[in-house]
Each structure stands twice: as structure tokens, then as C-alpha cells.
Image (cartoon, rainbow, N blue to C red; front, side, top):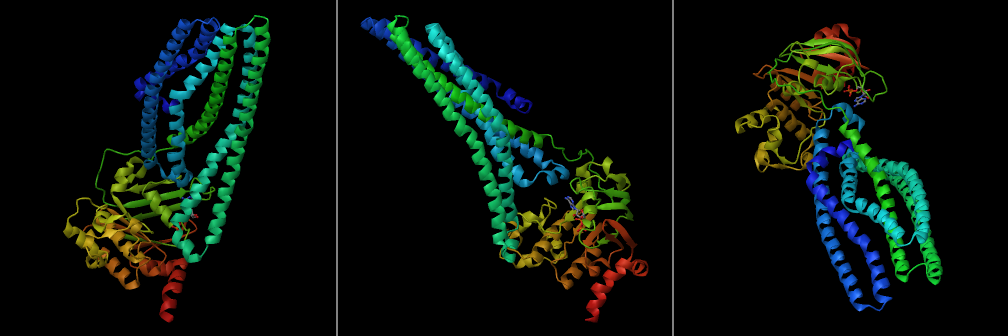
Length: 572
Ligand code: ADP
């Protein structure tokens, strides 16, 4: 409930008005059977037409007033619940974009989508329900019991019995439903994750022809969802008819015992009619209450899942400073293991230093920890031990925005958004002039943009689908250069370029006018060898550090890489 108090406070007035309306509406509904009893007992039985008119018109007026309250509360319930839902979604979205990377790893995006859509819809339904049946059902239920007792105490004993049995049934149903609904939501996450995984890797699936295995994986998740869905419905499908049966037996008992009492002049025909209507109303309210509990159970599960997002750690603190740093980097005995990586460190005891304006290449096989160095530098994660300094400031003392404003990254897989080339480039600098755009396109060997029909105003499909891998990489590099940051990181960013183009891009970066520290992550010796310093990584350990010449003298691993990549090519 703590989660929702903020929203309830915001919409307090319409919420309370809706509750008042539904309460008054329930009272109007409750009066119906008693008025009916009066019509029969005082009017029909005594053949008194004016009395029939009197009670009849009163009944009509009260029903109309009830209907007016119903219209108001229906409108308020819809608008308040939808508004609260929109606020909740907006807050969740805000939270998700401020997530620290640890949470991005922890909660799969498929699950985040289910929580943002399905779980919030469940909560909207529940809030809507509070302003409608949740208040009305108990009032009708309790009111019917009280009014029936006032009409005839002996007949009411049947109602008490029915209520006791039904309460136990509801309790059992709730106990059985909760874990099932919780599992249902989890199963839905899995289905969503599978679809998402497929969509992300659709080209790979097509290329490898692994449709069958993808379909099998989806089938498994889908069937699991179906099984849990059936089992969660089973509780309701069994309990609901039992409830109806119990109430049916109660109604028959009322008619049977009522007719015996009627014979002995201990009950009126009107009372017995009113009793059967109250019994029907109690049935309605009990079924509604079961639905309320089911909904409550689902909402509790959804709330727990939403609370998990709200409780997630946010990204590290931002700062008010926005200094332009020079780009000197030093790692001092840094060890880091991913929180979900099974405890095995991705980086161990790493120490190295790069001066501002220098270029550093990090080379090593996949999984050796190259990208992790970059994520730590961008402070997506904090080192477990040791310290990382940027311009002699410990990263932990800098705000994440300050760090990231000073670093540009060109990722391994270029990420482009639907929009024009210029829009994509201006992510680097939103005020960049056309001249600057042309310059960075030239530097990154992306002149092909000028040959496109509308130059850099040409539209890129979502993810840059209408470009080749190499073209995307070059635009992505141009965007990185345009940021004019103190540090530029190229994470295997030239892997799709041919050797000649790559050499040209490297050359252009080397001849830049602005002093910039450049970190190039690569598996290719041909790319690394031109950097001022080379860091050689293997299994999370530094196995070499120095210039190409130094490493060729003292680093066996580097010599091996050189031999296998360069000399074997030369020899061929
Ligand atoms: P490289 O860039 O050299 O290919 P990485 O730095 O990406 O290597 O990975 C180093 C190690 O950390 C690998 O064993 C990898 O499986 C693990 N790793 C990388 N990213 C994550 C992550 N988000 N969660 C858990 N483990 C990870």
C-alpha cells in the first residue's frame, strides 16, 4: 500500500467522492427488497392499491437515485484509475532509465516490459475495483444480513450458516491462488523474454536456420505458461460452483422453512420474497468478494514485482560539476567480479596508466576482460577493490554524468536509431554545424553518406537496417568523434571495416588537432600496434603493458598474437 499512497494522495478528492457515491448507491440497492416486502405485506396482501403506489413510487425514486450515483462513481473510477496507472508507469519508466547497470543485468528486459504493462494494468483494475465493487460488495453483503435479520430472525439463521461456509471457501481459494498467480506472472515473463530474444537475434536465427530450436524454446515457455494458467484457473473453477451450490441450498432452505413458518403464521409472504432477494444479493456480494480476493492476490503479486523495480538501486549519484577533464586514466590494483557472474573476477589486480592525449590499445581474446575495463571506466559498475582515477580524481568522487560527459564510446555493435543520419550524429553534439558533420564523416571514412540521396538528411530505418555493418560502424565512429570528449573509446569499433579503411580511420584519429585520449579495444594486432601503449589481457589478468616494440621484446602472449596474425599473413 505504501507504494500507492503517493498516488492516492494526489487523487484524494475524486477518489473519496467515488467511494461516497458507491456507498450511497449500495444503500439504495439494499433498500429494494425491504420496500418490496412492504408492497406485498401492506399493499398486495391487504388489497390496498394506494399503498402499492406509495411504496412502488418510493422504490422507483430510490432506484433512480442509486443509478445517478452509479454513473458518477463509474466515471470517477475510470478516470482516477487510468490517471494513477499513467503516473505509475511514468514513475517506473523514470526509475528504469536511472537504473544502475547491476539492475539491468538482474531484471531481464522481457520482464521489465511485463511489469510496465501487465502488472500496472492489474493495478489499474484493482484501483478501479476499489471504487466500484470492493466497497459495494461488502456493504451489500453485510447490509443484506442485517436487514434480513430485522425482517425475520429465525430465517436469518440459514443466512448465517451460508455466510460461514462461504467465508471458509474464500479463505481456501485465496491460499491456493496466490502462489499460482505469482508463478503465472513469472511464466509470462519467460514468454516475453523468448519473443524478445528471438526478435533481437532474428537475422542470426535466419542465417543459422535455427528456427526449429527457437520454436521449441518458445513452445516450452508457452506450454509452461498454459499449464500454470490452467492450474490457477482450476481453483476458481472449482470454488465458484461450490459457492453457488451452497447459496442455492440456502435459498431452497429459506423457501422450505419460510413456507412452514408461513403456514404457522410466523412469517409474511413479503418477508419470504424479500429474503430470497437478500439471499441473491448475498450471493452476488460473495461472488464479488471472491473476485475481489482473487484480484487482491494478483495485485499483491504485481505490486511485489513493481516494488522490486522501485527498490532497485539507482545509478551512482550525479554531480553539479561539469568539468572538462584532460583524459588521464589510471587503474590501481583493480579487481572486479560481475554481481551475477558467479563470483569469478572479470578483472584481477589490474594496474596501468595512460596520460592525457595518449592512445591505448587493449588486446586479448574474447572474455579476457577488455570491455569490462571500459564499463568500469564509465562507472556502470564500481570496482570491488582498488581504485580508478580520471585526471587524478577517484571515479567514486566524480558524478556519473561528469564522467560520461568526458568520455565518448563507440560500441562494438553500432546502435543507430530511426531518424536521419544527422540526427544520429548529433547525439554526439546536438549543436554541431553542418561543417562539423562533414568533417567527422570524413574522419571516420563515412563519405558514402554524401552519396546517399539526401546526404546526411537521409533517413535511417530502425537500428540502421538500410546500412551495411561497416557503414553503421563508420557513422557510429563519426558520432563518437563529434562529442569532442577528453576520452574516446572504440570498442572493437572497426571490426567490420576492411584493413585499408581501418588504417585510414586510425590515421585520421592520430592526426586529430584536439588532444584526446583514445582507447581502442581490439583482437587484431594490426590495429593495436600503432597505439602509444598496448595493454595485453588474458583471463582477466594483465599479461603485458607497453609499446609495440617493448612488448615484442618482453611479452610472450603478444609475440604469439603478432606471430599468428601478422607473420602468418605475411608468410602466406
Ligand atoms: P572481452 O571484452 O575481453 O570479450 P568482457 O570484459 O566482456 O571480455 O568479459 C570478461 C568476463 O566477464 C567474461 O568471462 C564474461 O563472461 C564476463 N561478463 C561480461 N559481462 C558480464 C555481465 N554483464 N554479467 C556477468 N558476467 C559478465
